[in-house]
Length: 251
Image (cartoon, rainbow, N blue to C red; front, side, top):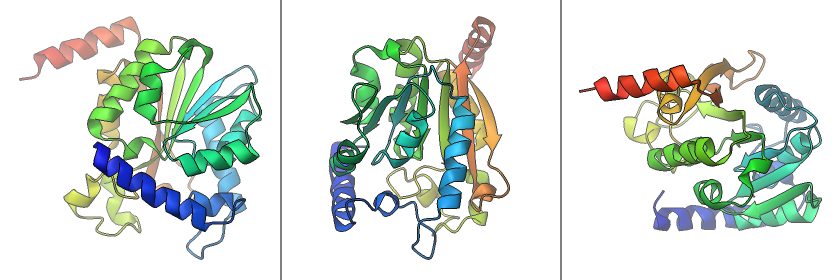
């Protein structure tokens, strides 16, 4: 995302957050039903999906990239040894610092995802990484840079969960506006972000040193028809060799 677009989006998000009540966490992050009410059952289901996708255990230290106001992150921190939440929207991090921070085990920071993974201190302290609804809002170049930096710098991370991805092949079944427009599906600056196919996520993982496992959403979730998750684990030496060979053999 270019600097001007980032600034515009940040301003819009800041204004939205400050129009909400300070403790209206789900409206601040747009986690509401069509009627405008937060659905605790869906939110609890989401938390369990994230915990399961991360294979989160009590000894894990979690990095949540695009953590919003920390309301979901805090529930995950309670299932592990804590970690850090990162978001580029200062107003959301202000909420996290007011309600959810518990140093030194649960901390929050206002910073962009790519900047953070490229420069943070002590990346080896993390064992799991989460993108929940944030990955699709990165430009293709930024998304690749983030995964490369995670693979290169975060030596103890054995699992990355990229959750809530909009499925390009199933866009027609979603309530998204202009869902058949290629321009809309490619617009990572929209509220929906960039729509990718499952094959595209598998290829992106292979190009950045990871092995991808595609996970369907539970059929009980109303967004299941047009969402999927991708779990990344480190590619073996053999997988890296074949991935490199495939890239070299492309015309």
